[in-house]
Length: 393
Ligand SMILES: Nc1ncnc2c1ncn2[C@@H]1O[C@H](COP(=O)(O)OP(=O)(O)OP(=O)(O)O)[C@@H](O)[C@H]1O
Ligand SMILES: [Mg+2]
Image (tube, rainbow, N blue to C red; front, side, top):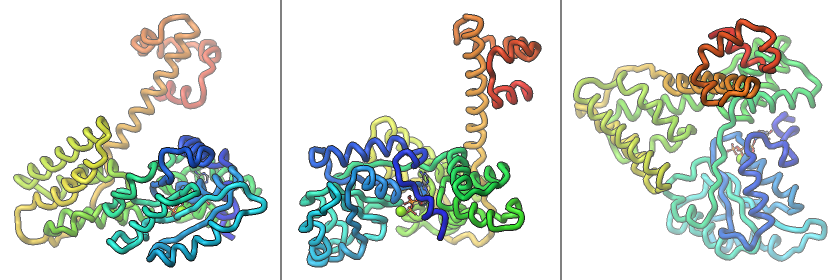
């Protein structure tokens, strides 16, 4: 049995890094039918706990899960047939019922297709509905989105993934070097399922540190998408090119930004940056004013806009090796540094009774004082990270 199944969380507290989502779902189910919406959509990248959240919500609220899949929505008769037992039978042991529509991405969006049928189901339902999907921004879901509460399931930080791995190992009574766990967790890029699978592979090797980690598919996808945007002529199809890339929009923007200068120069470059500036403009409006509709424009400029910056009417044939965005990494490193500086300054401020702002401002001097006096260091109760920071700065 795969470890991902054996160790799938059974309680809310075991689901890591999704605390907000847990609270929202629990409220949704316990308050149903007095909730504003009758369905919630859990959306986000693979292996982050969407299906698990739904299953655990059922356990924790003592409900029975009734699962529907994409093919059940092909027509009304079929759907009613499948739903009949759920509606008619009252469970003897369980209190409630939850309808789970897992992996809604597969539902067709045409007029006679599944999405309108699902919307009808939401209008009529007596039970709370949980829907999971990877890409809820697909245009076929626009009417559905209005009928549901949206919960974004975010990719967890690698440290959270590492914690999950350590827990699994404990339960399996196995030991693997911390460095190897860190490597697996970072490589997983937010996908906990992938990380646990890699862990199981590593544990089966005579020397777990020899595990060969394939770069996750995500990168293959983004490479492919970039290639199409930069090399092909802009067509309607290009508008959808980022749909299948399992990265957040913000992340895709960084990839495009990083690689524009590798493909374009002169006037092309100027045009491409102009398109990117438009992306940024809409991004700002989406964040500030919550105009989710603008995601459409953000996407248009990022795909078609960048593609149409090309001068020639011919597709580019050469091979380009695209780079990972480096800016985000720099920002992240910088934030880490600032955070440590801040926490050290805070501890110092408390100890010597000066204001925190002042301690931060005078940090260069304070740093020297702390560095030169081991007694202060121990009184400040600095943690490992903070000590490491002082040693290297
Ligand atoms: N937040 C989490 N905390 C602990 N374990 C997790 C978490 N997310 C995922 N897992 C582990 O990964 C496995 C897969 O998670 P799950 O099936 O819930 O992912 P998903 O988001 O539904 O992915 P997909 O979009 O591919 O359906 C789970 O069985 C569990 O072992
Ligand atoms: Mg799932």
